[in-house]
Image 1 (spheres, helix red, strand yellow):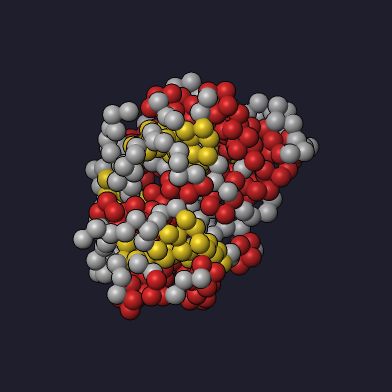
Image 2 (cartoon, helix red, strand yellow):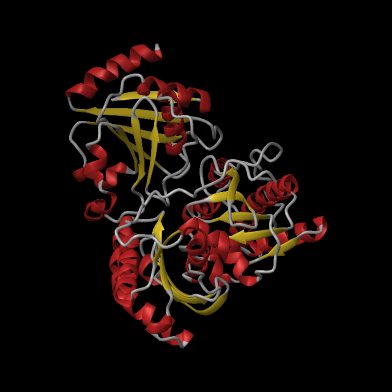
Length: 158
Length: 342
């Protein structure tokens, strides 16, 4: 597991860009973190690095938002689903199968429905007196992610 | 063949968590507006649960349509067209209403009209007062959307501003969730705010000075930061201060947009249009600027089928009926015009 601190928006976007530099077609990224931790903010930085030009807005109510950059980007929020049974309403298999990249906020809730190869990014809020601080934990699952995390670290120069 | 101006349209809405049916004559005369509320089913989950919504729509649709016809005192033979929301929304929910509408259109041998849910919301305020002259500025504020939209006399729409992150209604729901209040969060915050001090905490007003776009994610986060740093917070004061920040940004930008297009009036639309502080602030701004203000009555703010029937009436006139093989589109976009020249 790779742990990276962020002291604000710029650092968060640097981490998101470094991740965008090592992704490829079919990748699945799970984003965990409490309300206000910055899951959508992280996705905005990631999408921008992929060359998405339109604003990335929260998928909480719409469940799925789609963008096109260097790859097709599916941005999901599964908070409102009550369990894996309801994933079929999202047509998740089709999303995972179209050669795009899928980012899933609160993805741990449907982990049994997700491919074994995936990256889990967890975001923790800093102490109350440092409201801009975050701690990112990147947990790779599967061989391809393990090697790519090394490249990501090189990219960040940490 | 000239159509009469007085078509009787059955509207059906199932895009999210309400099963609704309505009969509207001539795009403005509401004869019935039935909503089978599902809030009780959803409350325990703290949000809309799509699968449950789909199943509940199936359970409610027949009775809801029957009630709409019954209350309107019209027979099936008097319906001239059937309109249904075809998107955007949850696919499982949309399909229930779209399938029902197509089946009825086929059996009754009348046109089927596919309606965009957002364009229907734009229509809701005008149902209250169809005499209001365009151009109009519409403030659409709901859980999924926050937009400033210009509308001209031919029902063409131009997007003037939108949220760049969270929708206004979503910010209300998420702040309520963080404060462990009931779902849906908007009405609860509205109620608590009445006993709170809106100046107690000065939450940020993002992007207040520039442009017509919105950003509400930062307001939500600053509420969370404030509550974490001040565990002995007063929930009424937080609700009032948060609501004041959101309303302030919405109204400031709406006035700017209305000036820009020379709007004759301002219409509120969407679920957050039920918020009492927003209604008061828009009314006050209209009086100060000499603009008419249209606040839809509460059952026309939230998802309803009267607005679908009305929007369907306009669509039937402008582009005719849709084919019965037209599907639902969960990610349907509004057909915005780049520049109305206002």
